[in-house]
Length: 134
Image (cartoon, rainbow, N blue to C red):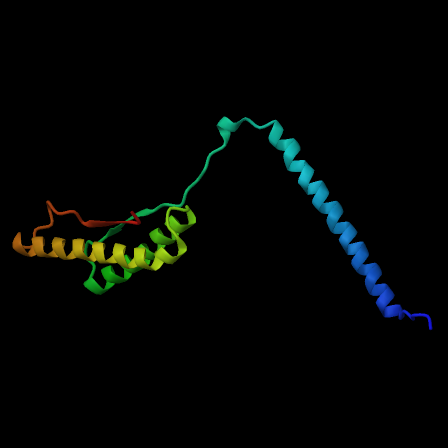
């Protein structure tokens, strides 16, 4: 008994075949175009941009809760950027974020303690905390 093909199956195969042919042609056209353009480029003009892994936060006039919130956000950003720059493994991002935030809050407490000892004078104190992923 001969095999029967239904019109829907035949149309589906034709549609998939046409789609595959179109994709292969598009990939071939896209694959060769950048190679031709790259041959004429001067490599001295190529620049590589990296995501920043350092961020400074101003603490002037902010409450401890606001500083802690900004520190946590900034620590997350700098560590995520370090991961994107391939300076940090994916499983170390949370550790880096916690360590950076802890270090920044320790610096904040030292600034506040020094300010209390100095009688509240801000003239010679650093009013920024710098967070770094390194």
